Image 1 (spheres, rainbow, N blue to C red):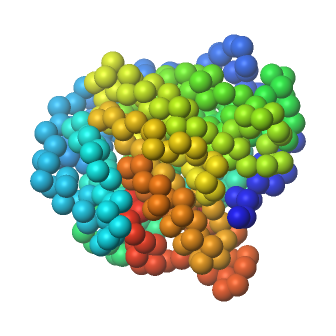
Image 2 (tube, rainbow, N blue to C red):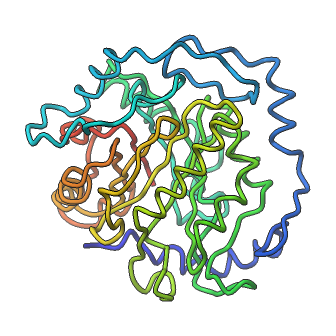
Length: 362
């Protein structure tokens, strides 16, 4: 199995270390110098339009919105459509709870640009100037709308806000937290594109139980969701990039439980949790992952390589170990490295069983 271009994090360690000197947060203190997102959202909420139907997203307001109840028959029909004729009995997932009103999935397919604003090597999100990046995202959205006209597309920015590093840093955790004002910038960029936001965490030698609460001020916004990357969760003490890390179902359940509590406390629509995966050991005990009406879990096939390798990875680690929803990652550069030097098209990705509802470009 190919690594997901692990060297990208090691190569940018120096740059990230320099950036960290400007960060207002470290392992023990948090200081925010920018206007809080809660106050921003409160100011902007006067302009926000309430959602009209299940699947709509309110992206600028923390004011509670009343969504219509979930139409169970419609939801079931959409989940059956996503199964895409799968005959194994694994899809759609059985006994999954219906989501709270206001859920994005399966009503819309998410198309996300992934990366870090401070690095051109970590993904398309930081590779291009912001306006050019948003224009390219808009083009990809149109491609997916054309490939599946029956499923609306929700654009997204997937920002790595905690970056695994090749150096230990002050906390000795081999991870660097990005400044909160960079998260503010991503949220502002997303608003321009009517996009939602994912905050992605690579814990290094740290813990998801430490990193997730640091982001609560952003996660109480209805348009902000979360991603956890087992590749850089180094539970055995190895340095990031030396081997592939892991999360257990217990870690996923901690995160979904935390997000569910935020949803209930702040009267939010369901949160989406992205879990990256491209090997079996990256997620252990998947059958113990709990499904909740407040959180929608996407297992995202995150590996890069030739089409046959990506398809095999999707089949073995996503299809064969069903959780709830599925995702598929496309690499503009790494997927072209090996023959036939071809990045899968939307039509080709949609032929998977089940059809992915979350698409990520790096």
